[in-house]
Length: 265
View 1 (tube, rainbow, N blue to C red):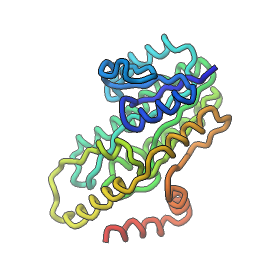
View 2: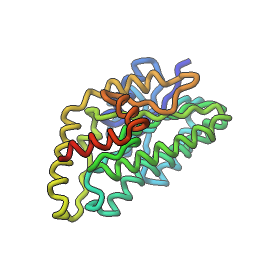
View 3: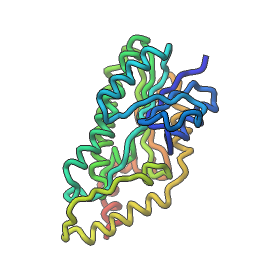
């Protein structure tokens, strides 16, 4: 019997690519969108309504899945967005929204599905984090912070769910050509003159990373390979230099910090 995989944020971009890939491999895929009615008949998989910023939507979504899905095997937390901008220049309401979506939205969706997994005594949670959940690049302070929060949450949750046979993993991509960069939100705070030089270089470095990013097939393949593993590892860095970044972050943090500062000189 094919596994049933639930993926958030699948109406476009990386989520759509992952959903189509898993569907072709024989998985039963359920995707989500804030406006699924716009895509009726366009996708080969089922699409249900979910806005991860709306508590009422999340509650209704959880109840729908529990009622309509006989066996749910995997939850892939994919929905989210990237906020760019220097920390001091970013308005607090914009910074809070980054956390509301990337962290709290992910937590709430996970909590909506956990009762299903606990009842089954089985399940797998795979969450798309980022390599910046391990490091703190300039110009991505609040995006990085939201991903650090995601990493910490799932590290703890992995232990809490162990007795229920629920596996927990995070995927930590470097730059990839997905809608994340294309739809990145630039903070619209008041520019501080002291940061003019740094801002210009940081914006250029961020754009260079997006322009030179690889195709996201590697991330899709990494998630696909994780599904169904008996003992999947928690952290899964993906992409060129990801292994080196993790090594430096763990064993030579000063060298990693030096390389980031050098890029801004």
